[in-house]
Length: 249
Length: 314
Image (tube, rainbow over all chains, first blue to last red; front, side):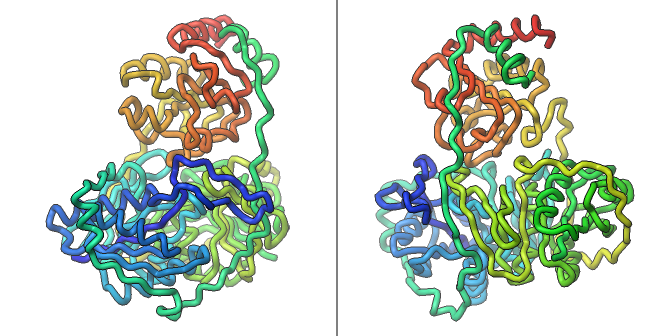
């Protein structure tokens, strides 16, 4: 069984995003970048499927700048078999990303696409669902448990207020939520090995897909700042203020 | 322009996330219909028909819709979309599950989690977990939008829309429901609670987390949250996590106990109306966003707080 795992290079989740002074976007110059945390979870799940013998090949794909090769190498060091970068110097919208991934799926014919539910930069939470729609494949989003058999996947999903379990026929799209697993750290020998793994580089134009943006970013602004608060002296003082001043008790 | 709101409901009535999405829809147009889909939706449809400003309520009934399967929603909504210029869905887990699938079928860019309708084509939405607000203008003729319910006021009752049953469409044989485990909470749900009490790494153990945070939450009728550090350390389950990689909450009152205020935590709670922080480190970043800060060890401050709340009649 072949598993395809799309990954995205994003601002490291420990770094505070800062808005550019001209309001054109978020400043990514000299900022630490990493693999999107949800993508890491998807890679981990795919590698575990391979270790269990369910998956035979784990292919990592990323769409992004040349530096996204580093992100792919990280995934290869975790246990991916080979990588593909579709190089794009502009940040593509989810619809364009989904169309490119659909083209990759047609070429690679994976049985399962495992990916993060959301990238922590654009916060769209859209590509997995869109890819499923474009391929007419079933989707199992926000997975916290995945059991894969030869022809189907039983997926426990995080839904509001609890969990839902569905069974989807393969091929299918599964998107990973936080509780699915704890991703491993790549060991040094595996990082060295990953450098020799196959990593193909293509461009969006190679796939003949329409990637024109549908949304124009008018501006990017800082969220409204919270007014400075006060320090209270005691718990009793706090309760009094919450009751009389803030009116929330 | 005609707008369709896909309702969030519990089978007996629409949830207030639906009323809030109707508010966003009415900012786009006065021509707003609501779709109530599921299994056995008459009561929920009747409650949707009462929302002021709603013209017509459409109902669709099938097992697959009741199970929330995205493929069934695609089959129902995509043909319906021909009659509408915009489809608005509350940004719940189900809304997020179905909206992009519908958008891709219609070949439009979904606009996720909007917090403001600027004009008929322009919307604001948080990115980078709320550390930036992006305003986007859509060039798509048809729009598929999810609405962050916490920022819109709920449309009040007072309407009397007509109710029309429509064909539920066929589900997909490729996806099937197995089971559902909805946790019966004896306290409010984290995403919808008016008050949230969260504990951080300072708790030191799972037992301490339970002994300190739970009684305080019970006293306040609050939901329980935790910082990622507390979750990572195993003091609290992951579905308690508030932050960039957990839940984003905006209650009336957020009480942070022993939480230092790492970026990823602040991103998940800084839109709360009133923030209280109790931490013994006066320099903890949480105090920069707190309306009321108490510099004290939680070990003494929380019992005192419990006592003060009792005296205040809580």
